[in-house]
Length: 128
Length: 456
Image 1 (cartoon, chains in turn purple, orange):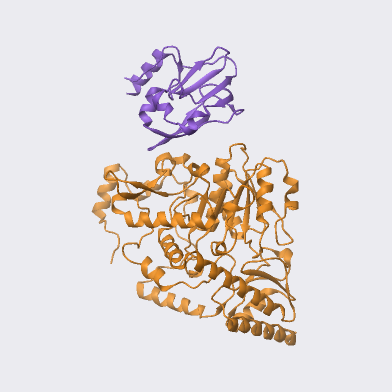
Image 2 (cartoon, one colour):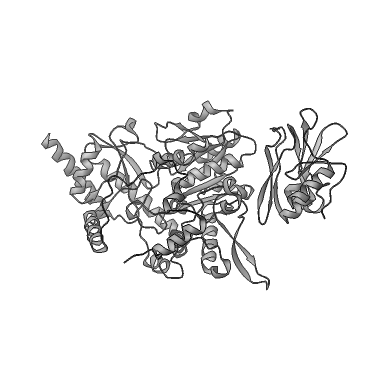
């Protein structure tokens, strides 16, 4: 059973979004996603300043068996990619909701169209 | 005898299993207007005896002329061991060794090839090869665009000193993906930093530098590389592997070295064979390894701690990442890679250096001998490797025809790709040309030019 913190928002493509105190957001991939990928060997994080539409591929997570795009859950601009992932991609496996965050973004307006923890839980159950 | 093992019953059963009526139904997603019934100009099939006879007759037309053409494919001495080993049953396949447990020999050979090519180019990592030098430039351009962290530009600068076929291949391969190759004219036979000044500060992904360039002339690779890096442009080196026996490797160009180095393996033990097949090589720095297309073989240890080899970094290849793969042309040219590896291991760094020096010396002698002929001048008075551009006092094509009649293949006529150069002829002398060969060419050229004057 994968961990789905109640205080975060989610996407159907398995990203999570945390709204920070200053209104910016932190983004990563869910515990379910890291479990499905297996041990990560490389993460390509976005450059600061990159402008994104919701749904744009903005990062790549690579395990020994697959390389997958990570999609921007919301529109906005990238403030920073997580520099720790360059040397330690396994942080996504060990702490997907903490030290394994992928990028911080400044959203264009209030984040919309995201799933609650319960909705994401239901989505995972439906995906089977 | 039929070479296709399926009987009509087999075919009907297979079609039935997927619910298709006839084989044509399998292709119905290809629009009708894109399909053709037959290829114009391709005659009816011949049987084995007829085709053998035809090909022998065609091959005999080549004769055994003295060859002075380079232009991207070079006649070098190939030690007999190269193809004796390459054509052994254990190696005789060009296919990718996916099944590591059954392919340790092939995998080890590719690993050693990668090691030799990395060492030769001074780069950190090599892939298991590409089709040829032209497709390697195309893949290098796509790779640079993907790898460039600070630019989203799809512009790539290519001087006209890059092989015209490489430029055409790169445009044909990548044009559909939006890559824009911008040609820089080089009337002086080299690319200079001054030619690049107008691109200063622009958003450009990469600059391609060929060394030695298509005219055989040495580019000022250090200054060009440093200019590109100062302008946030990645450097793609297209290099002749033989020349690296004596020239500075691309990994050491300028302050930071080229970002990607590629080229054609043909000079390393691959016969001319009327233009192919050859193999391309592609190398880069470790920081860009995940953007490198094609197969890469890695060395590892098995559960018992013994050395073993396996394909690695495959997560971005087409069988996993489909349309988002780093390349969808990522086969390697295994057989030619085998030949190149054996060639390099037989020669070693010292042997390759001797070949390169001989090529250079013979070309210097060739230029001296030919420019003594009345009506022949040297075009670019610059340091060169094993090719040079000569200017004749009349159109080149008829002169080449006359030389061929005298048993000399006199060089590559540049007037098609470089009309601005006038009656320009690209000549080459590798280590295979002797002093007598060079004298024979000079005599034949003198007679040809004299005879033509008399005829006029």
